[in-house]
Amino acid sequence: MKTKIKDLRNLSLDELMAKEKALKEELFKLNLQRYGARVDKPHMFSLVKKDIARINTLLNEKKEKKQLMGKEKKNG
Image: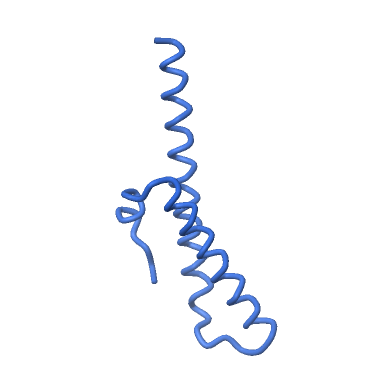
């Protein structure tokens, strides 16, 4: 389930956002299992959270890169 950062870097902004949404839905389902009954795979919580954090990091990097490119074009 662990997603490598190299694989994520090749995705577009829209693909990253879609993947983040899917992972958040998966985390929500895991939380429902946690509080509703029992969780079959408790290790999945940390894996999903780490994948979400990786995606958020890449999204922030791409946004900052766009902002820098925009500033350079204004100054250039």
